[in-house]
Image (cartoon, rainbow, N blue to C red; front, side, top):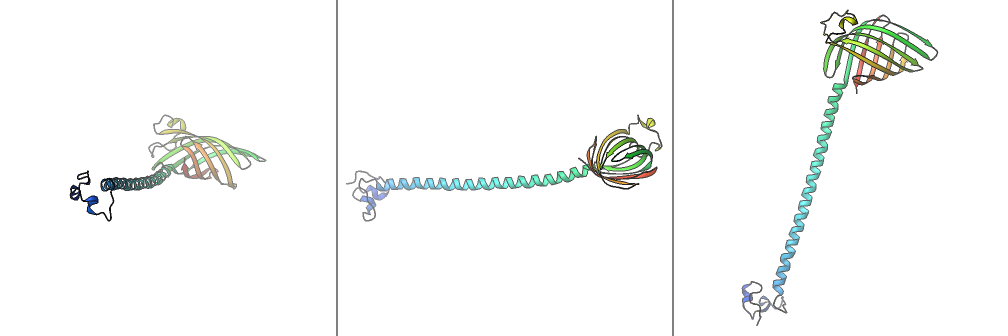
Length: 232
């Protein structure tokens, strides 16, 4: 007689003479505990298998979530970067057109030359996503050595939108609230020059940043100027 009554919680196990669930051909149980231990092992194996499946699923889900977040962040940052770049380029874009008159003196000795002059111009500009009108009284000088030119200029501008007499002298608009003094340090490389005009390309450093672009000028006595580029 089996001394373990109901060890497997199977109704057959309550028959103490029905060994191995009454199936001695397929089952063996030397101490009457085989099926119970086997069932426990199956349960433990199932729990481990279930936990492994859950771990794999959670790992795949976390990986997919991480990839999605990284791709989303990359696309979002790339989009914001492009929008920011376009916006900054829009703010940095500079366009100015002037007409006026002036006088200057210059000389050249070999590869070294110099120039000093003063101009009064009336201009229209577009910068930082807004347009403006102004009158300009400027004076400056430059020194050139071979193909390189450097100098300093002071520009007294009145952004009056036509409210102030355009022929006003600098001392008459000095205290006007619409007047601003801009000093510019020039360092350029001349790539083309003719007797009456020049095309300069290179950096122009001013209080508004570093200007990169093209400046076209023609002003023996009466002339104009166009400036197109970006402030960085």
